Length: 77
Image (cartoon, rainbow, N blue to C red; front, side, top):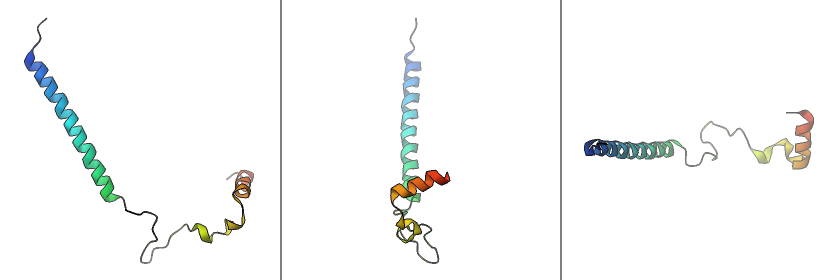
């Protein structure tokens, strides 16, 4: 059996470049994702935008969590 040192070196070079480029793209995509994600997605909007969900002003505040769960299963929603 003949073992070619050039083929082994080429294979090792290919694997190392593949791993290096994979890590490079992983970190680049993570950086782009962090750049696109807002720092505080739950903050109150500015301008003419309104926040669609405000738990402190809902009418369901009069129901306990157990009562809300019972109603959820009762209505089947």
